[in-house]
Image 1 (tube, rainbow, N blue to C red):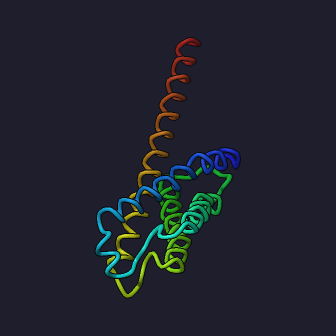
Image 2: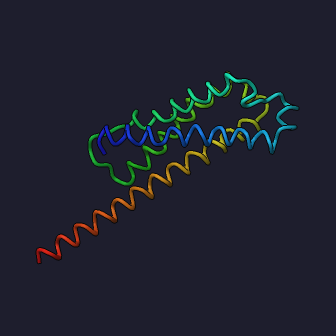
Image 3: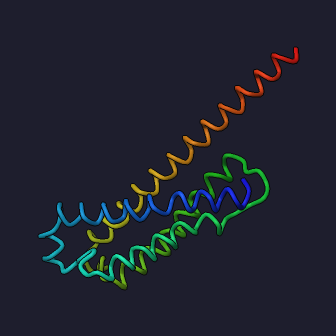
Length: 152
């Protein structure tokens, strides 16, 4: 996968990350609003929290660029990179969330909820990416098969 393809995917993934983060934070507020207020944990409490979420989404969408490789990856290497990207995502999300007081380390449930939200969003994006890759592979295989049958 070339650098242009990675940048194109990052641009496609960014709105998904940002939008799903906003939706997840609103669902968090709807489902656990009184619990969060009891522990003084507020996501999107102020207008500049949207900006912080936007910055966090930019950092998260840039993580695949950190592990770019020109060579073709084996399945094991691909899964290892997915794991490293997930670690990089947590390394960018948790500090921002802690600075914005979206989580409190003294309340482990708040950290667990954030980790759960990040994992759900991450696995949705990875599953979508894998499905697109599978469809592209199937299409290329069909075209090669048709070309081979025409030549035979």
